Structure formats: structure tokens, C-alpha cells
Amino acid sequence: MFSLFVYTQSLPPKMYPLGVHKPTMRARLLLVVSFVVNFKIHHSSNTVFLQKFMQFNLTSPGEETFSPTDSRPEANSSDTSNDSNVPTFDLGHSPVCPSEMNIFWQLRPPFTSERNDSKDKPTDGIFHQALDFALGECCQFYRGNKPVMRYLEMTDNSTSLRSHILADETSLVFPVQEDWFIGRMLYINVLDSPGVVLIRRETFYSTERRTQLLKAIFGTWPIVILSLLLSSVAGIFIWMLETRTNKEEFGRPFYRGAFDGFWWAFVTMSTVGYGDKTPKSIGGRLFSVVWIITGITVCSVLTATLASALTNVTVERYDVTATKTIGAQKESFAFKQAVNLGANVAEFENLQEAFFSLENGSVEGILEEMFTGIEFMKRKRNEGLSVAQVFERQHYYGAGIKRDGFSAKVLDCLQKVVNFVSEDIYSNTSRLLKSFKVRSSHVSYTPF
Image (cartoon, rainbow, N blue to C red; front, side, top):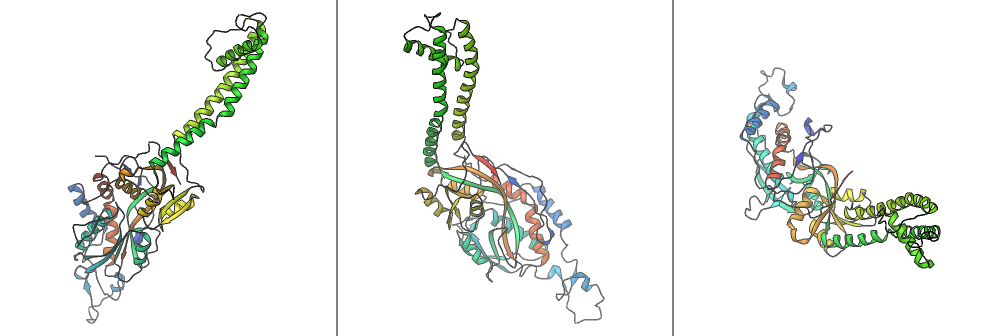
């Protein structure tokens, strides 16, 4: 089984809500992408580490007792033993988690996927499993009960998902982009995406490449014509210098001798040097020296021009320009990048709509987040899709969770636990993905 290789890179820390540092992760697309079906911590020792991490980095449950009218510990530092009317409660026995949560989510493999075998839990994927795990651990740590999950609605586009963010009934929504306005919700980062990919159809891509290859070859005609003209002129000169003393090799009449001279000049210029015709006179040999230097230069220019033209087509760097129409999902990070690249952007509600437009030729490519795009290509394996270009630009996806019903300590715990198991999130993403070989053998990487 192949894996998605992920490496970490130190970047300036970015503060999260409640003072948690965001982990940084940068991934490069090699061959595959995955789909997670069961989140777990890989090694049993990591479970012990998680418990110790929570003990040392989180406020211990029940260690503080304070009034619900003022959550600040210092506000309750004064002696209240004589005031029996001030209600106090132990954090360990207070409701730290809501009894139930209303969930809205977007179908976006491999972040989320649809399950047809369970009505109570109709979604799965990286995000659902990581958040479900963190909720269970944090509510249990603070002696609360894990909320009952009520899955209300699934959508296949970002526009519909954003409409639920500010709704009063929404408790949890995912996956959301970091730059979305989520109002009174807390943003919890789950996965760092390394960039976006440009998806094209292989058949269209191959036909276009053959056309460009022919154009590149024929585009070198000025250098070819120049080489032939110079060889013709040099051939006439060598014939004029040699025809009197070397009639065997540069004889008459003119057309025959000039052609022999052209043959000698072209063979000399190309550095082949058959030796079937050689100047004998002093003037002919001196001219030969001059022509050898000139011919090598002309031949080098011809070779370099042709090689450059073929290389630019064979190892093509497909650039998104204003002359190309690129499809992207509405209100997505990929849409913003397509605009920044100066492409003529066609907006679509979901990837399936964009794919239909790619099939009928309305768009020349689809720009999509890397993990989602490759997972989509895997599901369309027989449709001749290929990655034309990768644009590296790290961005973040997570979940919006309503603060109502949660204690501040549980919310702090949720972000810290998700950060702590980030390696397992990436490992599970890699471990259970099916192999996917990128069709295009020439994928260019473009950093923003």
C-alpha cells in the first residue's frame, strides 16, 4: 500500500483561540491520497502520553470551586463562609458538555464521507472521527457525558454549509475554512492542506500536447532556413576557391560544383565531417577554418532552439492564465486562488457540476483543494483525469463548534487534544488510503 508522505516544517506559531499554538504541517503530493474509516491512536504508548498530556496541560477537573455568576477564580478568593446565599458548585459535577449537538456537514471526501449503513451516524471521514474522539476524551476527562450527536443535514457545497453557521440550532459544523466568519462559534483546526491542484482531462491534454509539439517543431523554421542559406553561401565560396585546383571534388558546371560545396559546408557545420570532400588550396583551407567556427555557432543555435521547443512541450508547465477558463467551487479557497492567478473562473456548486463542464469542454480544467481533488480523481479513475499542476499554498480546514453548553475548559481541551493527535490524523489519512497513481508524468509545482 502506498502512503501520502507528510513532513513537518517549522513556521512561526499562529495563536489559536484560548492561547493554543497551531501545529504546522506541510505535505507534498507524490502518488496517493487516502480515506479514513477508523480513527485511533496508533501505539498503545500514545494513549498513555495523551493521558499525561491532559493531566499536565489541562486544568484538573474539580480543583476549583467558584460562583456561576463570576467565573473568575480570583473573584471568589474572599471568604464567603458567612454568606450561605452565594451558590457554589464543583466543576467536576457541573454540566461541562451539552446533552446533545446538532450537526451540519458538507460531503467532502476524504474530510467527510457518506455512510449508508447507519442512520444514527450517516457521516464518516477524517473530520468526524477526530472531532468525535476529542469530544469523548474531553467530556470524560471533566467528568461529563459525551453529547448525543444529532446529524441534521448534509450538503455538497460550501454555500449551503455557510448558511447553517449562524443558525441558532447549529452546534457543530464541518469542514469549514479558517477564514470563514463563524460568529459565536469556536474554530478548531483539524487538517492543514498543502495547496490546490489543477485537474484536466487526459484525452484533451494529450491532443493539445501533440498540437503544441508540432507547433514547437515548425516554430524553429527561421533558424533552419538561416542554416541552409549560410551553408549555401559557404558552399559557393569554397567552390570558387577550389574549382581551379581541385576539380575532382569541386568540379564544374556551376550547379554541380555549388551543390558539392553546399554538401561540404553543411557536413562541416554539423561537425560530422565525412572527409569525402576536403579543400586543398591555401585559400580554401583558410576559409574552412572561418567556416568551422561559424558553422559550430550556427549549429549550436539550431540545436538549442529545437531542444528548448521540445522540452517546453514535453515537460510542460501548464500555466493558468487569463486566456483559460478554469472551474472552481463557490466560496472555496480554490476559487480565490483561481482569481489571484488571473484565470477566467467559472463558479460551480460542487465538483460534480465542474466535472460535467470539463467533460463537455466548457472549462479547460478544475482547480480544487489537493486532498479533495485527488480523492475525486480516484473516484473518477476511468474518466481520464490528470493533475496538470500543483499550486503550493498552505491553508487550514477545521470545524466550528458552538460555545453554548460547554465549559471553557472543555473547549480549551478540544483544541489541545486535536492538536496533540494531529500526527495520528495524518497517519490515519495515509494508512488507509488506496493507491492512486497520478496520470500525468510531468506535474509542475508552483509555490505562491
